[in-house]
Length: 269
Length: 308
Image (tube, one colour):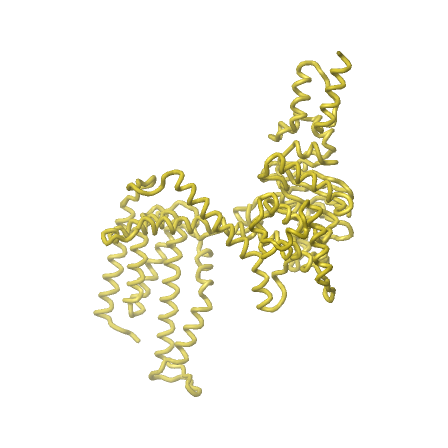
């Protein structure tokens, strides 16, 4: 019933959706490595090809993915502009004081844009196809080795999943408090920056109070159910399947390919 | 101020797969001076309806970016919605919605969770200061006296309360302070969403009593949204039953609860008095009452007296 729809998760059933979250996390890390190992257009094209395959198999609409790119559009344009203007080298096309546009600068910027976009699209593919809950499960499972050095992995995962669970609740609450204060004549849209920030105090104070109240209630409820102590079992167990094998092989192939390209083809810039 | 609403529809998340038709072609008129009840299940559209009355939810035609759609050929366009509160036309973009909000006070569910200021006085004065027109000023004394008036009508001692922190008060007191914070501007229409929710029976009765104190001189019209049938039966002059985004019934409680079967078929409860009337009817005794406890007891006693 709410105007806000939270989260990135796109609820369809697909090959990618069914993959193990651990594999997807590892894949993301591996993919990022590949993006930065690749130093030629062939390498980056290979990365992009794999990513397009992932998108095709995930059944997430392309429009949704473009929206993720839109979010970093400013960052991309800004970094590209800085790089074009300050990169020095041969083949100067244009120069003014300390700014110059060179062939190397343009190529470097193109690489940068491609890398940034690949990075963002790949990480948003992870959140589009994995629910926050299974993502935290995956992180918890991947961090298990840290338990040997007494790192509280389980507590960390719990904190993460509670935080994620509370985001929509708090957004709802914010909306409600905002409406209540609007009904009392609060104005959030006019005035200078200082006035606007001050206008949020009547929202923030009740919101913080209610967040603390909820946290306390949740803590009490967990206590009342004797949470903690013994080793906990999972309702949904993570299992590797043939899909994950396919994913793993793809990643291995990609990294090997990109590394070989780097060694034998070398830097094109 | 009279509330006139015709053909009002509202869809949340319009145009997305999550679209929900919260209101469908609702028509309802509420006269000045009524103590009006709005009944219905969760998700029946009652909250959506009342949020339209002070412009927290807007009709598309009152938004700046609105462009009228051209009707397709051979298709009759749906009747244009009408929503008027007093002299304010809520379908018009030129309407001053802040001025409207001053006239139509709204107390949300669990209003005590919207308190924020360091002292009760500052919190109650929040609305008062917000609604000042440009250039208009209130002196310290005027604010103080308005706040203490508002606190005293909700049954709190204005002088003693004013300097306390709203967070040190009891639950019932907080709710009264929150109500005072809305009525301090003397709105003509006061809307309350579940004003007695989460209170014990005594607290409920006290809240209803204070609403009756407010109704009349302070706020001409009072609208309460409620699940509690007894509350409606005891207090309201008229009530509307919302169901799946439409108004299923609208009548004075005495008529509404006569039709108990219809309410039950909508999955709603009926007041205790109506249940007793039904139980007596099954045993062949007809009690003709207006479903307030007082009247019911009087009528039953009269019957008993008549027989004995």
